[in-house]
Length: 91
Image (tube, rainbow, N blue to C red; front, side, top):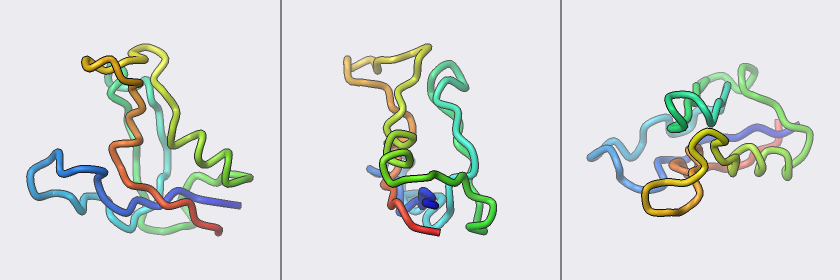
């Protein structure tokens, strides 16, 4: 089993809050929530993390594109969870 652990925001998009959720584990994720901006919840305890059967399954979750707003204003794919630098960790 594998989990997604947040390292930091991929870029400093919230001022100096680049460490928001750092070290926490993805607990749930809906890429279509909030009009396609996505909604992720995070857990400090690895036992509460979403679990994936393979590294590929975890990677696909991280790369999931919103189906209701598939592209950002700049024309790039809208993959809300990629706002975070993520590490795939074994349980």
